[in-house]
Length: 223
Length: 210
Image (tube, rainbow over all chains, first blue to last red; front, side, top):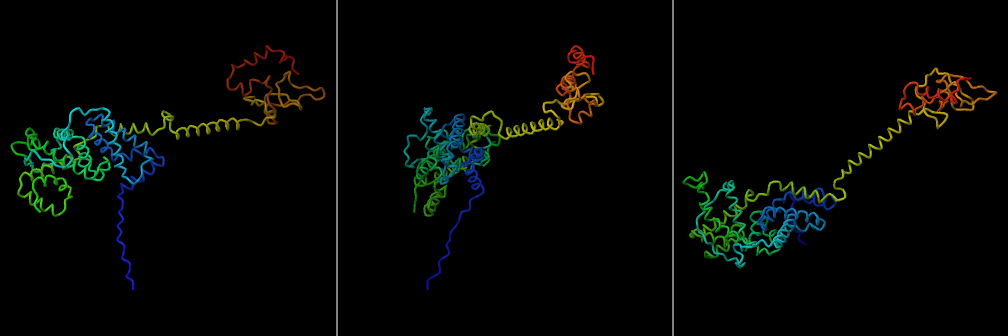
């Protein structure tokens, strides 16, 4: 007597409401309701801009590139296939647009930190100061935000791109790799390097130097 | 498994991502317990990830969304329709024209009496008791003395008042009763102007009468 077939344990992933809405919007835009395109792009506006900014390091240039990327996405929306994520596709367009502009402008006069270093993952930290945990309230200070943004801007492009997509825009390792057209291993290596370099850059300031003149800093650190 | 500092630094990013296998994780944690430098590197890297992951760090410029929408709007409207009112407005305007035209036409049609002559003009303000003359073979009524009244020797013209003539479908003579015709009603002339003009034209209004 043959045994009964085992119950198949198939788990069907239920798409969340935002995914369903995005798919519906996509279908309608591709069917000709072009006035809905902005609704489709709206959740990713910030990502598109910061991606362009990470590459161009100039607000006006980044805005122009971001707008151009959105227009290109609009023009080619008919070619988009659902195998990829719409957000990743959009990010790829923004990356390509910004890179193209940067190549045209030849703005990279000074060689940023880490450009010559090999991509083998080896990096020796230079600063071993003890930071402890820094509260995110420090970001309320515009001065601190500017210093953090400036630090990212000094990274070499290949590290900056990965860092912005992964750590600022919270793309997954896979999405970052797809958007930049590089391997998953390269994303991980560059991400490690970017994080360690930023830590070295920021350690003296975040270790105390930037907070000496702040109102809450009267003899003791708030953390 | 025993790991050294370099090994820890190489894996620190994966450690924060939760992407190291359990054996390596235990080994790294053992190392971190006794290595002040590596602990400082780990804490610092964790701070970097946490601070940069905050949405407040990178903000889009003020008005970015509006400017993006404007550029998209320029792109999504076909060039030949730019500056032209939306289709629904044009449809409403067309419908208004049709309704208006029909209303105007209807007003004209319904005001038109059934006249014996299709070419006759509508009478306006003819005194109902005005004495007029008609001939049987004509569709027109005339004021007394009009030279255009058809006269037959064997059949003298019939006399009646204007309201009676109009009831029977006769229409005013465009010459002798001109002042009562529609064409003249829209632009009233000074009283007596026709009479003055008629008085000069004795060929049309001979003083002798019938």
